[in-house]
Amino acid sequence: MQTRDYETLTLETVDEHVLVVTLDRPDVRNALNTQMGFDLRDLWTELYRDAGGARCVILTGRGDKAFCAGGDLKERNGMSDDDWRRQHALFEQMVRAQMDCPVPILAAVNGAAFAGGLEILLGCDFAYAAPHARFALTEVTLGIIPGAAGTQTLPRAIGLRRAKEVVLTGRPFSAEDALAWGVVNRVCADGKLMDEALETARAIAGNAPISVRQAKKSMNASVQMDLKNGYDFEIEAYNRTVGTEDRIEGIRAFNEKRKPVYKGR
Picture 1: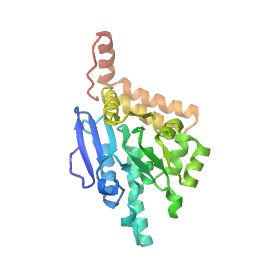
Picture 2 (picture 1 turned 45 degrees about the vertical axis):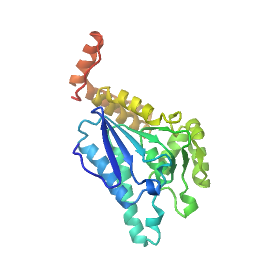
Picture 3 (picture 1 turned 30 degrees about the vertical axis):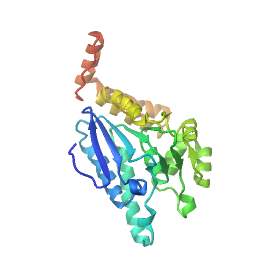
């Protein structure tokens, strides 16, 4: 992956294989504006093209108030219909690029994740949250509906009937609810969010990267296929790992009672 500066994101490589991406507009609670749309689209696209040494991404927000407060409504105030549609087309590209990203993405939800912010979270592979984090899809209270895949990803995460309640009321819910319903995998103790996210990211990054990516691809396909076709897909993904150096290294390391050193080939 070629490193570059992003206007609205801060990137930090940790331990060679973990990339921490911070949504960095704290003065507006990390709201999603047009520039952040370009930045996130380009980041996910670059990771798809060439992940370099990145084997896991942690996505978080700057500060302790918000992960992402959703779309920047000050920027959107007074937008023409055509400008709104052009901006949303960019956000659609961003969402598709995130969904196509082969590198696992772990959201570390440090505060409010509302509207588009919750949709960005739902586009990650899984999420941890701080105890004070709050969540909502508020679009219907603003005269629109979720448009960054929220009507698709939320029902898959929490079930259709509960998702209808969340979307149609626009009401916020707590980190405890998010955990119970399946929006997040873990609520971390105060001050421990990034420590726990990094521990998990390092565990993922320590595994064979081709195996991790093939497993992610197969699980993503599972929700779009019946069992037989899903299993056929899994076998194709499995066979991709058989001829790798990492498969040989993994078995050898197990038998030699040492930690494997994976090279992604």
